[in-house]
Length: 312
Image (cartoon, rainbow, N blue to C red; front, side):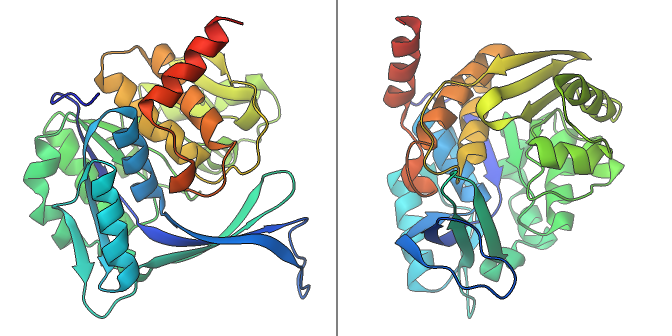
């Protein structure tokens, strides 16, 4: 059930995903046969907005789509999912962003992205929606849109006392100027290695990476570790929050589902540990389904998985 106090803004990308299942990823110059080709809505920003909305948040999305059929249908679907789209703009003479995704037999994915209209999410566009960001309780960011715009949004939120969660994906090095504005950061293992320069092989390494990120002033570090779960480090103290055991078929949008659900739980007053457990449940359901937004569960499904595991 949605609550009016769950005032969250997600700023980020919106894509159309073209997905093909393959036995193994192709090597250079190799052609491989695939199956289960499908087209679905995605983009890290839109995925996280949908995950938050389906988890129960009152959520607004700031993003750009093309003035094409895909952009129109994407906006319609966002509204159906309960996402407020007053800050989603259709960009003239641009196509909606595209992601080309291979999924192998181990449920891992390999993705190439064309930004399309996402590149139009400019500093000026962010500033047009400054009041939306400043009046929120929480701003959720990722890295599929122009970095200057992300930094502008972070400054607006930080100066207004709005909590900021940064999901630093796709992986890239970031400036201290951005990181110092962040309250919670949620990298996966690869992203944590790139941000910190540390190689992660064991849980001790995970906490060392968390310490590096804490040194930027980030209070809470959540490093997602796939089937292991997530490493939650608060004020320098870390613990593993185990994943729910499921049979994964497709990990597309698992991290996005985690982030949207995690943010929602925090806004409901859950502790970081409780929120991570809730988000783990949401991500566990997502990996048992194909595609990005089609895989994202609803609140009742997440609650049911919790109840089922409590009864084990």
